Image 1 (cartoon, rainbow, N blue to C red):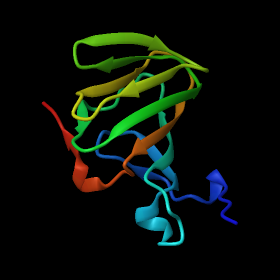
Image 2: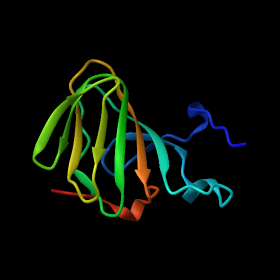
Image 3: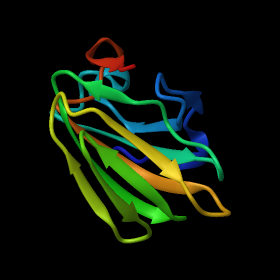
Amino acid sequence: MFIRNLNECKEIIAIDGTILRELINPLYDGSELHLRYSIAHAKVSPGNASFPHRLTKASEVYYFLRGTGVMYIDDEKQKVGPGSLVYIPPNAIQYLENTGDQDLAFLCVVDPYWRPEDEELVE
């Protein structure tokens, strides 16, 4: 049985500036997990935004848990908040702006699983 608690996951700063905790990722969790995807908990602090970036080989789904913000994907933008789900196709330029007064917290599901070499910043 595989169980993980968010508070036991190491907090990292991702290439796009978001604060991440990898909940499950076959890259780090060993070969006993037969998954194509990874799931991370992420947050953007009030008044901040992630840097424009893209995943070159994977799609993403963001599911928002707390806070309010604006999601930018290529030339589109949309308000997001608790209960919002956003699909991000591979190679789409994306970033997220926190427009509220609390952390904008969300889950990131990446398929195939997230690898650092598949993510790049965009100017």
